[in-house]
Picture 1 (tube, rainbow, N blue to C red):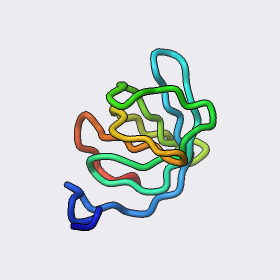
Picture 2: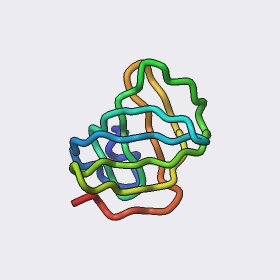
Picture 3: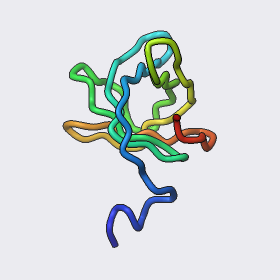
Length: 93
């Protein structure tokens, strides 16, 4: 079974900066794809959160607008972090 077949929601390529807030501390990453249930983000060099950590994501849609979502870390790799939203979200416009 392919990754796409295992996903609950289809992924869409998306290009934006994201601020990852964890208890007042933060990381900055770059979103590469999104779905209504989560997103894949480039892994910040100083990443220190474990799978299951709860965060708030701020997707910087443009220089004037941000979209916020509560999420949890569901997987990490050397280059990326996968987040699952705590509540399904509409895709950013």
